[in-house]
Length: 343
Image (tube, rainbow, N blue to C red; front, top):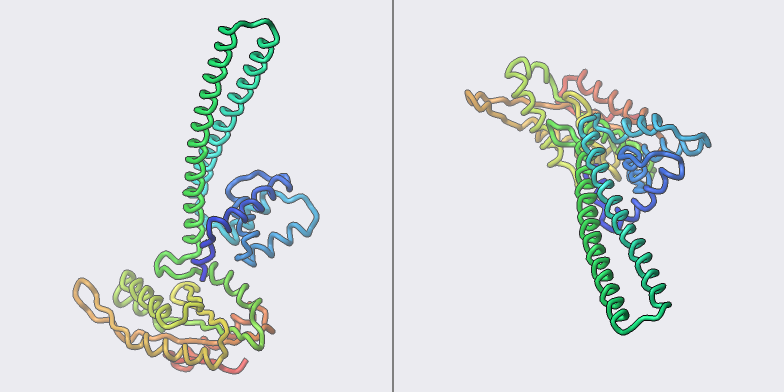
């Protein structure tokens, strides 16, 4: 599922970051949040569509332009929330500035300490008495303690920077996760579906078939016109929840658009998909909703479902087209039914 894309452990994330961060400088690109997000996902290897688009840029042999990366980000990562990106960029700039200031501060102290020690050494090359030696020892001890204190301050400051970067990374990943969710139904959105479709289609074979269900709520416009759009939204939420409750954990449920949903069933034949589809159809036909205000009952909610099977021999667009065609047949034949007409 797409919500599991960014559940990397601290060690895994650090290893990916070590690969992603140098990549920008190697290609003469700024280390901004957009570029970091792209190359983090690239090396994480969990977004095949993004990796394919990035590889195409790299294989061209031409200098990568920032505008090309912005397009990749918008197509495969962005939730088009410019304010969010601006906020993250400002936070990242502030945190990194703090880190640079901390390192520069201690480096300056180290240099001053080295100069001081050299002066003390030079002083020892002349005739000195016991008092001079005692003073030199006390001064060196004092300066050393001050440097240690500065180091401790730097360690604390850099530790805080690490914590802030960790929090920012979590915020950024949450924003990316949110970009792949449908805000109304809280299931995968169309872009998440497209990414999963690409990945699952690449894994499909005769031995590992992939089944697709295209689902449409029957007469949904009539529901909106009769009970209002707010209640129509509740129908969408309940249908989405019903879909999720009647599939396996590895199955992928998404809102395809409007009142249409899609389900990807990995390692499932057409026959197995029909069983799942019939189970879903029956569950939804038994739903009963009540309006909060006047307690009016809404029932007779039904869906039509079209199926397709991919054995690794279908392009993803053709795969969707077959399922969509069967959905059309199911609706034409009277709705509230499942169609898996031979492809």
